[in-house]
Structure formats: C-alpha cells, structure tokens
Amino acid sequence: MKKTAVASKLCVRCNRVLPLGDFYPNKSWTSQRYRDVWCRECASQYCKDQETLKQYCYENNRQWKDSFWDSALKKAQYVLATDAQYIDPKTTAKKRKEIEGRTAARQFFSMMNLGQFYSYVENVGEDGVFVPDEKPPEEESNKRSYNRKWGGFFSKEEIES
Image (cartoon, rainbow, N blue to C red; front, side, top):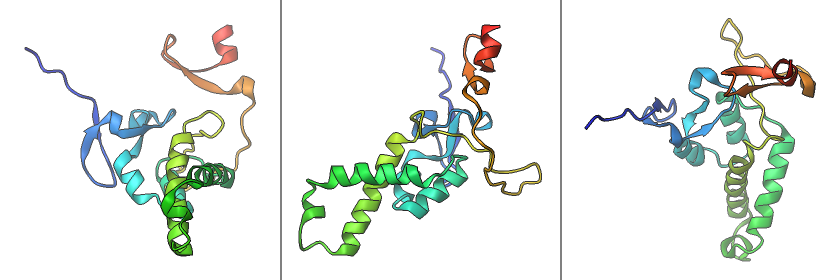
C-alpha cells in the first residue's frame, strides 16, 4: 500500500512541522501555501490582548484595524456576561481584563477570515523593510480573487470577458 504525503509546513514560532490544517487560512499568501506562518496553537497561546494580536497580524501579513478589535471585544463581553469567574465580585479588575483579552482574541480568530474583516497585507518591500499599508481599498470591480476553474487570480471583469 502506497503512503500519501500529508501537506505540511513549518511554524516559524515553535519550529514544528505540522499539517496545513493546524494553520489559519490566509487567502492571498501564496508563498506560504495560503496559510499563516504561526500554527493555531502558537497563535492561541501568544495572543492574549490587543498588542499581541497586532504582532500576530503583522507577522502573518494580516491587516490590523482597531475596529476589528472593537468588534471582537464587543463579542467577548457578550460571551462573558454569563461567565462565572468573570462576573464574580471577588475577581480582580486585572484578572477580569486578562479574561476579557483572551476571550476577545478567540473572537478575533473566529472572525478574521470573514470577508468584511479579511485583508492580506504584503508588509515587506523588496529591500526586506516593513512597508505600512497606506493604499486605499480597491474598487469592487477591480478586486482580484482566486478562481479555481481558471487557476489564478482574476477580477470580475477579466472572468466575464
């Protein structure tokens, strides 16, 4: 019986080779097999607040917007409204903030590949130096997306013609 190779890649954070399913999808990062460079386990262990999520987004070529964090935080507060430890009067403000940050990070991960939140950012120029994202968003008609049938990235106009 012939063994089939499982598609895998290296997590740059923990240096383990893991199956592709252990990485969050990253729709436009072709050089990384359409996946983030951190495995899901590293992402969940490291990301515990707004600052660590910003670092995650930077290293994984994801666009950061404070509005994304605000949405995740709002969802986290809704989820935590019935959490016994969070609403316990004996829980310190510091501990409550920590619980809120971790829950918001989980909410962020559950939302990050939704269309309105997802945006790939090539954050390194040809010289290897960080380039901030200052370009206005593309018009809907010029937006390019991957088409399996055509085997590449095309705009709606290119496919229809």
